[in-house]
Image 1 (cartoon, helix red, strand yellow):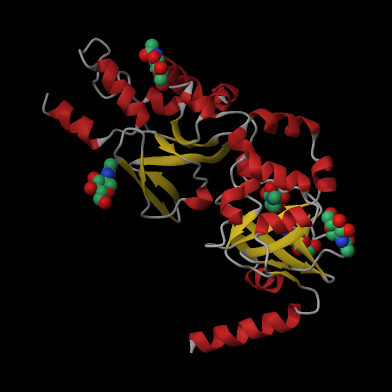
Image 2 (cartoon, rainbow, N blue to C red; image 1 turned 90 degrees about the horizontal axis):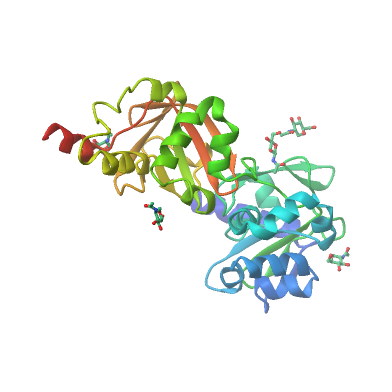
Length: 311
Ligand SMILES: *[C@@H]1O[C@H](CO)[C@@H](O)[C@H](O)[C@H]1NC(C)=O
Ligand SMILES: *[C@@H]1O[C@H](CO)[C@@H](O)[C@H](O)[C@H]1NC(C)=O
Ligand SMILES: *[C@@H]1O[C@H](CO)[C@@H](O)[C@H](O)[C@H]1NC(C)=O
Ligand SMILES: *[C@@H]1O[C@H](CO)[C@@H](O)[C@H](O)[C@H]1NC(C)=O
Ligand SMILES: *[C@@H]1O[C@H](CO)[C@@H](O)[C@H](O)[C@H]1NC(C)=O
């Protein structure tokens, strides 16, 4: 039954787009975009090593492809930042790519698609045009699906930025938000962990100043204990998850591997989000190299707690 419905749906889509679609099925996505004169996009995709995936005919992608004119409209400060922030540059580009083979009628019907970056892009129909998040539409005359060998190109007139998007690195954000994170920043500084939060992609679950206030000496770990330094170091690594996980990409039951090399448990319900036994009190503080979620308790890896209990 579902299969049959799917088949009918696909037929409907093909019929409704044949009038506008172009086919370059002998060319891969990178070749298509080069032929279409999208030179700025092609160069950026090459700089971020995304070109190999997009020219690999073994998998398919849908690219929302800004024109050169679209790139020339981007704020000069942002372009300047992108030039020396490779993670940020890649985040923006990944936000323009949707896995799979998606023609516009299909995207319109589902309203929303997750991008390679992880966050969703939203689509609405508007007077014959397609609005992406109400702001950006395919360029008139280019508003067709360009069908390539391993995917679809949709030319658009603006560069998109992901919903959760920031241009300061994680460490800098902790300083900017010292109303919440002064203690966490100091703790990371003392533990030689700030510099990796400047240039590696992370999700940081950052206990607030109030959370630190709950622990006079981190649950009885006194700084003069022989292993105190190592324990502090591991406790803070337990708050760091490699990669960018915005709240959109965190689901009830998720287990995330931390830099401490053990997992934290995510719980999501009507009251909000928990990380182990800590509550997320502010989510999605955007950084150029990841994201910060503020939590109301310091969390402890069970193996360390066990060691402490065993003396
Ligand atoms: C998009 O535009 C429609 C119609 O103008 C409006 O109802 C809707 O709230 C807008 N959505 C966003 C995310 O701005
Ligand atoms: C489509 O976009 C390309 C690249 O920007 C441009 O060269 C071409 O003239 C456009 N075609 C139409 C019909 O607007
Ligand atoms: C899309 O719209 C939402 C709601 O208005 C906004 O928060 C988000 O930043 C927009 N995203 C883009 C890519 O414009
Ligand atoms: C700080 O960490 C870096 C690697 O992350 C290391 O190269 C450096 O030696 C460390 N410094 C100290 C004082 O431990
Ligand atoms: C996380 O969940 C696992 C079971 O999936 C459990 O063994 C572990 O104790 C949980 N961790 C915490 C800190 O609650």
